[in-house]
Image 1 (cartoon, rainbow, N blue to C red):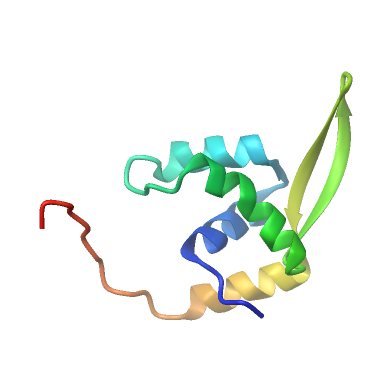
Image 2 (tube, one colour; image 1 turned 90 degrees about the horizontal axis):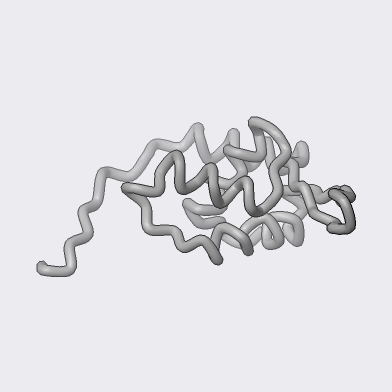
Length: 100
């Protein structure tokens, strides 16, 4: 399996809570870590599709008026991957500052 990014695990963590649309995921990421993490909105929109391709997420479609939207959830394989990542020791803090 491809190595997942921290963003991948953040999205898996949200999917472990409940199913989300990409719009809801992006809003939740901004609300939760938006001030300290610079993940662009477009990256958050693409992440569930990548997790789906890896079998770590599942997708269902629903009708909202005339629009169809996709809601993503976590698979058992995704939960196992997230559980394994959470069991690993964390990396020390890193500071990024363009002036340096």
